[in-house]
Amino acid sequence: MKLILVTMMSMALLLVSVRSEEDISDDGCDCDRMLFPVCGSDGKTYPNICVMECENKDKTIKVTKQRNGRC
Image (cartoon, rainbow, N blue to C red; front, side):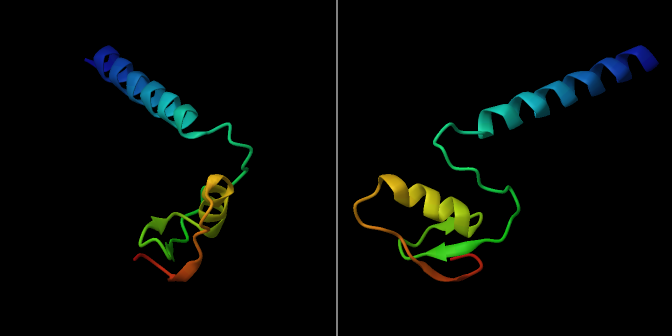
């Protein structure tokens, strides 16, 4: 019984760590993962201002912060 529990916990931990690796992008932005939501002028909620500014890199029309918090 303990072996099954340990195996299941190990697999869950492995899945979480693999998922975290997928979340890291190679777009050149080094944004903190802290959650300080901001509402962009496009009506989208961004996890933080850094992520919003990073996504602006490839856009011709830049998104600006409308307010702190969710849209």
